[in-house]
Image (cartoon, rainbow, N blue to C red; front, side, top):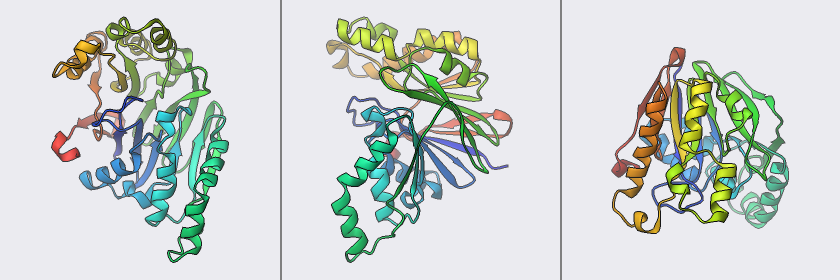
Length: 309
């Protein structure tokens, strides 16, 4: 049985941090890549991961299947890149795209926006492949909505208003991987995460949010999950391994200027969760690799930053 590899292609948020691309991750199963969310930088991160980890499935021309948790811009701004760059580099099949209500309209308008480029590449000197720029978009519903010889993907409604948003529970040959997308605590993510082998979940700092303005305090506490709330979730759901992504540290103006402030706040979140949770907790960085071995055992490696850039 082949190992299941999970690469964190982007662990960022809407904040434009140089070392964090937009939200995106991939599962690689039997030389097929499955992308989850499509933040800025996705294709180039995947290309780098293909070389770093010897994963040909992540070469641009092989990226052809993507699942979108919700339509916020930080989770979808890489779609035009995913649509066009792999095609330019040789993809010869349509991009399979799955997402919430509105994904078909988004796909249609992307094709319209890039019509001049598409026409020139199709009928100009390049004579680009006639299929590789197309999109097969499907609006999903809760429950099992995708399966092939490698995986099954189940969607669960989560609480991230005003969007129709989903968490994904992925059944692989070696165990269960769950990706929260963006969500406040809710029954949907609790159900999705139940006894998962690997739970990849967003988080914000309970300490940091106290210093936000009333508008942003109300927003973040309504649509995201603090480490305190996440601790309650994992106690109930009992996943084996917890990966933190889309982390909102919410450093104050003075804190943000301090060297090491982000690392310190991140460590505080990990330490809090580790004290509440029996499994391992990892604060993910871009290009971190998690391997799901047989019977749900997880191993983890993080490359030195010098190798990632």
